[in-house]
Length: 236
Length: 236
DNA sequence: AAGTGGTCTAGACCACACG
DNA sequence: GTGTGGTCTAGACCACTTT
Image (cartoon, rainbow over all chains, first blue to last red; front, side, top):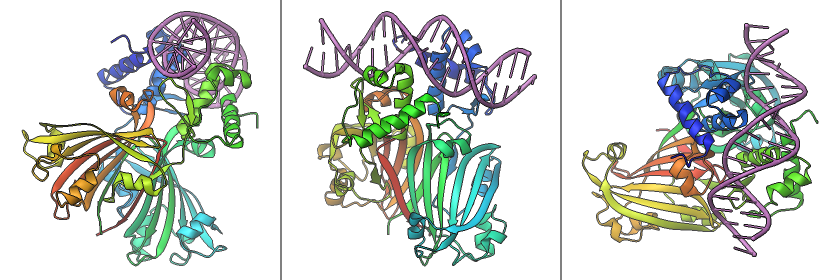
């Protein structure tokens, strides 16, 4: 068994350490230097083992604050018209939504096309951050069609699903979703408080009514280790 | 601009190098030592830049053979009942399926549950490898319900979709899909010919008929840089 | 002020791929 | 056999977080 590279052996030992110590999700690991000394190796190699566990989703890092034990994955159905908040709560976790801002702005070409607007049309752009158990798990940009959602910028947009249902009488029954595994880099990585190159999931969603009115187009950048996507469908 | 870490500057330069040189997908990059010398840095740092590009899906590595330029992503709809082969061909790429083997074997608990079989039931287990333009892109294990698919092990299982349609008169209209971003490790990484810890996508699919008969349960391990998932659905 | 994670250097050895 | 990628060492400095 010792034909395995050292960093994979370290990975196994760290994992054993974590499960035997019954470390709670969110617990901070000892410092890299301390761990390197414990396992009698270099920081470089120790970091390779940590990176391995990070890519598996067992641990994560925040800024320069250190390494933390991950929580179980969240199940998420991007097709169902149920609020994120309720999803998370139903799984016994604590959701929180932070509204970064909302503004009326010219629609980028791909958004105008998705919402079937003229080229020079304005749309509402809503930016939000989503937390689970106080860990930031994804950021999103939502483009809202002003034709169906007039003056939505003067409404409480932290509970968007509720707002659409109760104030505008809209439910989004038809969805077009794309899911792409990507690396989180640049401004996205910064906003999510992770290192550049950290694996992530890019999810886009076009929400339409049963009659085909394009109401909202959504772009979400997720941390890779927090979710499992679950979709049930029936072909026409 | 030079406040960026060196390895990210190298990333940018390598990317520029690749686009300016108009490197075709599949082209091999110069050796790490040569690149390190070109950019006047260490192999360690140079490798960090390469790893960055790998995590973004711009390049990939195969075994110990070196680094190669990635092809555009494939679009894939795990919901539609269309063969992988046709998907790939429709996008102007060359699909290939390699049947690793098929055997009758006791169903693992989670498979028996998914296919709604008794605990001691046997199922057919089909293993395949899938290629696009001669690059291995995912491996799969398919469990086939022998109640609906008797003696399927004596049929040509490289074109499974065609076989189900034409020989058994079955089309899979209802699907339950899960998609989880994972790390490819151990035997999976080895079978896919990638390094342990390489990011990947784990997709499971339960295929049912319109009347709810559970025909097949599929587990796929994908390389992260080859696909975008696209799903269109309508709520009931 | 002390300690941490993030980055970087300049070497080294090995197993494997390829010619 | 030669060169390659994969792994590892033993240091170092910096910016940032935390005490």
